[in-house]
Image (tube, rainbow over all chains, first blue to last red; front, side):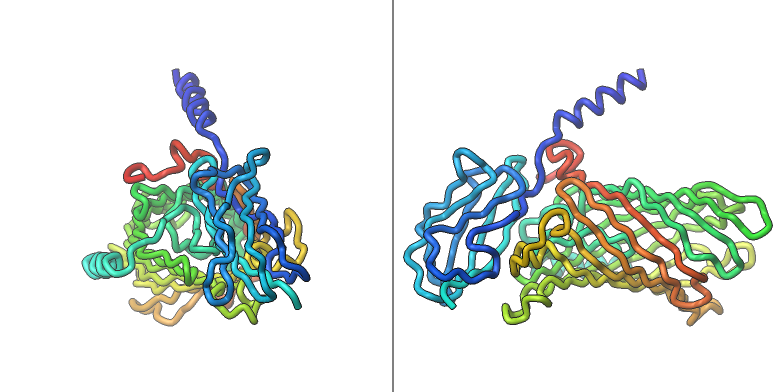
Length: 118
Length: 302
């Protein structure tokens, strides 16, 4: 009976095994780096699949003005990729704010900067 | 003291409510790992299975090895409990070895605040080391209960200016607590009130690589956190005042998606704290990531 209980408990836990917090794996433009020409988009690769309805990216210039096109979306072919288009960017420093929810409902968020031009 | 702690907790909660409380130590961009020596400043659903310790040789030559198990469990999103116990293997010089369990330790913790913008967090708690739950005679496990109000905090340096990119991955966590034993002496030896204090200085390569500057650190090294931990205990009374003991523990933590591993050297700060070098290693799992829909979430209010 005890063995049956342990097996049942393990099965219940195993079926609830899912994914984990989504962390940024890498991004384009790269975190903290300078790109010579204005990028058309910010793309972030995460360590887990994302919930599209609750995952977003916002990009701001140094005065806090929003420079992304507001069309952030999870890649339909790879749910670990989140992308947002950018308006034409003049040289300067930009800050990316991302907030995502992994498919098991864990939220994470983060920021990083990139620079356009020298 | 409990009334004071409760009052502080209530006042703090009223003015700085927790922001989006998540398990295992997130505050904005910052991820605080579960440190081996320094109590974590966050409530969590986590377990250390196990922590293996080879203590520095004691002043009388005794050698000790410990196997410890810890569990942290959230009851509410901001309220958690902890359980810990350890099995000891003690080899006194020229005498038979002694083995057995040490006293059971439990705790109740309340998350005071989490500030994502400034990567700051703090909690208050009340820990108890329970009488007669270990081998009292053979292993000197206590025959008295000790109550310990605690204050734990953490602060990341990510809000430093962008012009200091290599300082922003630093973070520090710290502890402050006071022991209140329920018996003033045991077998003729005094049981003092003790002041416990310590801190951990961490440098997160994950933070550097993924939040500050892509310097090309790939997996698995981008999840490495070198750190130094310090823990000190100073008896306050009953003839023991001033006999501070403690350890300095340099090492690292590697944090993955579901678990972390850590290893540290143990360096005693003085002869009262031991001789030579000890070591500790820990395997630590994130229950909230392994079992997000069952034992990995708060029991209520989630």
